[in-house]
Image (cartoon, rainbow, N blue to C red; front, top):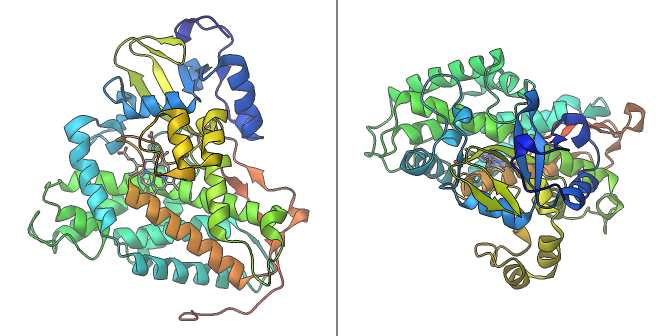
Length: 426
Ligand code: HEM
């Protein structure tokens, strides 16, 4: 282990660069854990020193104590009201509360139908070809269509928004902001907010069940400004799109390449739910989440953290911590006794940190929405193209080289060409 020193002085700090993370994350995090323990000194882009927290207990502690590990002001973004991710305390509660309520009011059956319709329409665009790239042709546009519909964009505008969302993410890993595509996206959301404001009931006067998410945010009793609604809707689209699309892509890869899932079981396939779940444990879309800064000197996993030190939540690393794996593999009660952590005692084998933890965790209704979109997408695709298999001529599915987000740059597949189903086929 390296001596107990702040990261700027830590020799042997590990560069958090993309290529290192494109391979086998389990092996990488095992090496890091063996060499450095649960809190690893790393350097970010531009040589900025930080601590990568890959111990489950330690990551849980950092995410659960915003008074010691506050959001980094650097995540505030460019101009306008600060993003949800940059706020703490009451200011965060006001905005996150409104967003959580607006997401919560999403009607589950309507969402499932919208996901089915979008998935069927996308399969129609390539089913006669016999080949497709499931990242560009399916996972990304499916997520974009469903999320834009949820926000209230008419179908005719969805493709504009989808193009902006499909733009390569900013590898700073945090905000995905600043590019032209992002500016286009913000402008489109602002225009939608202005249109909806004209018809939305005054804040607090509605029943909280507006027809779409933007209308619900505008009618929320916390009286958000148009700028705040624009900011949070844009953030929801950018934070939600990439991990959901990656979750779908990585799950399909697992189901198409692993015998446990690809072998037909009495005419059908294994439950998509098992594969979705396994991906969250082993190949999670948000590998590492940046943006915490120590508000004071403290101890963490045997390291002395200085006031002002930057920390990165190593979510995939924490998921692979042998201590939690042993506990989660046994049962929920064991997970509680081994880690001593409340909050996971009833979650059982959903104790992964893939959706974060604490006040800045992925809002629960967002997790449910993501799961509905992902599960529906996977099920519709396998139902429509039962003989689908990896297209080996296209090479092995390639990972995007990013230490932040784990997903497939491309997932080439082939199948027996089939007829389009057309609108209303389900
Ligand atoms: C419908 C899709 C989704 C939406 C709308 C959504 C939305 C959000 C929002 C608004 C936040 C910020 C919360 C805050 O700072 O208060 C967040 C955080 C987060 N989301 Fe999601 N999300 C979605 C899907 C996912 C998926 C599929 C994953 C990964 C499996 C994921 C992982 C995370 C993580 C790890 C955080 C916390 C980051 C941190 O603590 O720094 N999200 N999400």
